[in-house]
Image (cartoon, rainbow, N blue to C red):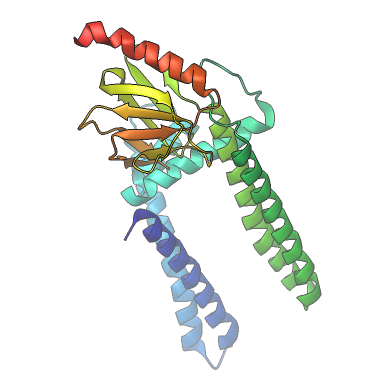
Length: 285
């Protein structure tokens, strides 16, 4: 079972336990079904105890930081260390997305020497479609809810159940899009840094790169490193070289000796990488 599936199952189990506890309590009655009432509260208490234990682990991890001044960074670090290993990858990615969303509201995007990867038309269309589809589904849900609700209380509960997840997903989309705009590949003196936000980050030594050329044909035997765009650059590595990478906060190894990349300016990127490879030859001859 993959890490993502385990995470979804655990969250679903918590929501199911809370829901079952609420249903049992609301339908048990106060006098005639005291046993069911106790059972309902016990299910809810179980979830509360699990959360309390997680907070206790976080407090212990925070105290383990020593005499450092308490800040958002130290609290985040302590909370991360208290999480199970299978949760830490996505949690770190989620925090990055929140940061990207916050910067998108008030921090102008600054272009540096990175080779950008976010200006492709397909990616922009997919992002716009996702936002439009999410907004349309949320509005349709609210319209249907207004017709089906039987009381003011049920209406507000329904609005919260629709607006909450919709707002969360919109923040995720906007934050991840900002991270992609801030990302990009970087050609350094002795290595090439590949970055697509939280989707893919990795490094490869330029001495381990055989060639970098425009991609004109098929890329069936290459690992695609692209934000929904058609790859336009082919990076060929030496035999046996494995790129150490990270996807959505979790370690990852593509395994292939060829990487199919998308770059907004492929010709300039190929020239820069080829020149950097040529500079490595005297060093490793």
